[in-house]
Image (cartoon, rainbow, N blue to C red; front, top):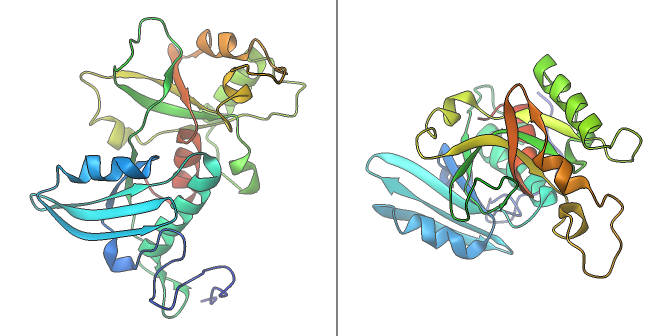
Length: 253
């Protein structure tokens, strides 16, 4: 099996993967990601016991237990670029031997749940309601650097969205990825289910105007009126499509 070079898999002298600062034994199979580092303690305060803590840059990690269930909560920071680091390094902790620098023969699949804030795109979804994402539609370019295996359903959704949003002749190529049906089944009662659009920025990509002129001034209105197979866009934020996309590529839920 091919050995992964030191420049590709960066391990600290303490045996931790560089950015998220974890050893494989520090990671639970169920992972909750939050953007803001201060939110990690707001999740882990509900653990019965915290067994591990670490912090490096914006990446704060607490691992602990609720009953017999082991959970890791991790801050990812903001945006698809941080998700590229977070998902790859979580997968490395689960599926790469740090000593031999080889991919393990036995694959471990993680359950990864993003818990965050977003903007509603529908008038009947009030502030502070809960939304669960059936699909992530990415306006970012992260997945274009990988070789994803889109389903026929995802390709049809991409094409329909690109046309509706008026992006056919632009330099933006959206992608769409379905979330895990197994995880989605846990979030039905009390949630608005719908598609989440992931933007690569907070200002112009989300239609906010300060001084710079918008290239796509009607984009937000088009997002709010898009539907596919009776499923609408409920919200927009900056991470979901990257988590769904990389999670699928790497074999996680």
